[in-house]
Image (cartoon, rainbow, N blue to C red; front, side, top):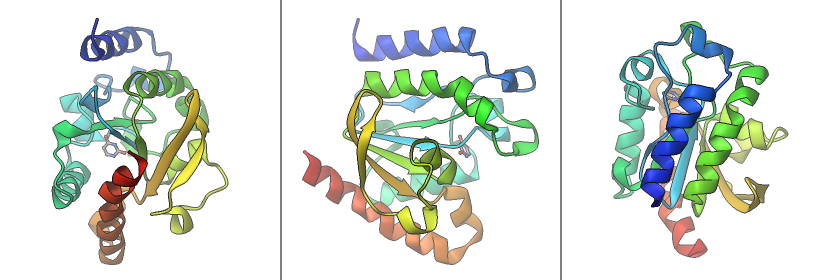
Length: 190
Ligand code: URA
């Protein structure tokens, strides 16, 4: 079985077995999406209303901005892998609780271990703080972090959440600059 088939099987299993309470109110689970052979995995927070309807992560306005940012560094959505720490939409888009995050954690861990990317990019503080609870996004954005997670030492780049950039011009500018680091870091890590 190749990586693409294994990833499909993994999502099928977790869509049936995930015990997260959020699934009671969500329309459907939103598994990660993109290339099973990606060098970069982006981790967001949780699906919103559009993602809940479509069943794919980052397909709403934050996703549009993310696609723009990818284009700015000459990458396409299909080249990378995009997922969330929580796979079901929290009611009224409230923040996920630590229990909900914990219930979806093994699913995320299985995705990362299978794809085994060179770089993991956190989109926002929720994703970052799950693995680096002491970091502040205002200080850690754009700084490469290296730590043992998901079975081995890995590289992480925290960024602001794309939704924050939609309503704040200065965060948008910071995000554009931080994004430019991605190809540079990948080149250095290879
Ligand atoms: N925000 C997220 O964190 N994830 C999505 O999938 C959409 C919006």
